[in-house]
Length: 156
Image (cartoon, rainbow, N blue to C red; front, side):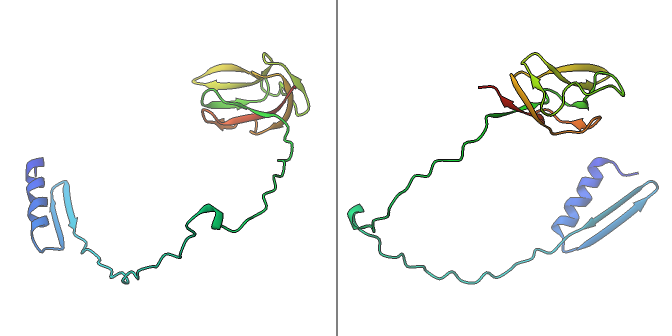
C-alpha cells in the first residue's frame, strides 16, 4: 500500500516528465494522473485606435436641451424579510387560517407568520404599520435569511 509521501513523489515525477497519462492500481488504491496539454490560441493583432478629436473647452460642446421629468410616484412599499432561515408557515397551527391576508392592515407588532427553525417555532412581527400588498412565499416553503416574505404599503 502506498503512503502519502510516495503518492506525492509519483505525482511530481509524472509532472516533470513528458508522460501524458499514468495509472497505478494496488490492492485498494487506484491512482490515475492525466496531464492536459496547454492550449495556445493566437489572438489577432490589435490595431491602434485613433482617438477622435475632442473639443478643447466646454463652450465648444454642442448645446443640448435638458429636461427633467419627475419620476412616477411610487407607493412607499417595504419588505418584511425573514430574520432567519427556516420553514415558513402562514398560519399559527396546521390547517388554520393565515395570520395575515393581502389587503389586511397590520401594525408593527402584528404577527404575520411563523418560521420553524430546528424544531422551534418563531413568531415574526410585521415591524411596520401598513397594509399587506403581497405574500411572496408559499405556506411550508423553506426560506433563507433576508428573503422577502411580504410587501407592505406603509402608512403615511
